[in-house]
Length: 282
Image (tube, rainbow, N blue to C red; front, side, top):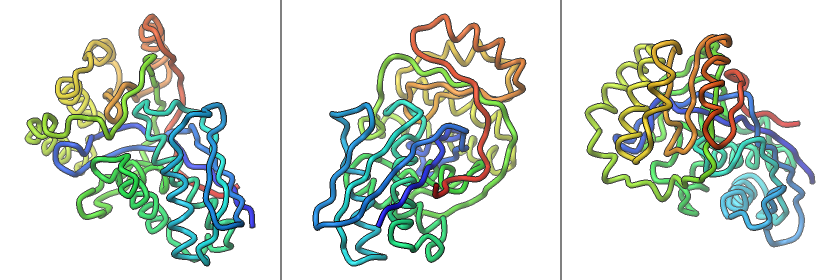
């Protein structure tokens, strides 16, 4: 009873901390999960991260086996192309990959819609306390691909689209855990977040994410300098999630020029594209 799956990372258009509504888009970098079911206990390992917190993926296995199996135990191993706690939705991607891999091991992939599978991962994140908002925006973008707008308080998908962007990511040499973000402070920028939501639902994604970036850099204490450097050449630029990564979207030549600037800072940068297919078994 083995299963394997992978799910893409994602960048932010609208952070859901202020209003409970968010938007994110999948990028062509992945978290992969391999699940072997058997026994009565659930365990997990993360490749290259011996001290990683594995409660989320373990809970994903438990929930799937409770709902679609016979309460089996098992072991899950995840391997990520992106850094943890970088604002690139690694937790949502790991949860999605683990849910699909567990369904694959049970032979139940076709019995569960992608939306239902994403919500299993959201529930697991809430159960173990690694999310403030439930992160259905991040989970849905990763599971479905493309760009999604969601109401995280009601777990409702409000819109989905397939923007074709090149994407530049800069990740500083630090971590920022979503569960540690100051939600009360972020609530102060709710009027701006509501405006960003309106722009996103109207398809004005680049402007939406740029306003989101400036608002959340202020609320969460991150520098807005990378945003200013990117404007006005890129289509959009934002702090991704609760940081510390920044994402910019636009044409590749423009992003290559911006990369030269962003690379002068400590950390890592990479160029990629949007991803439209979402999570998949392997």
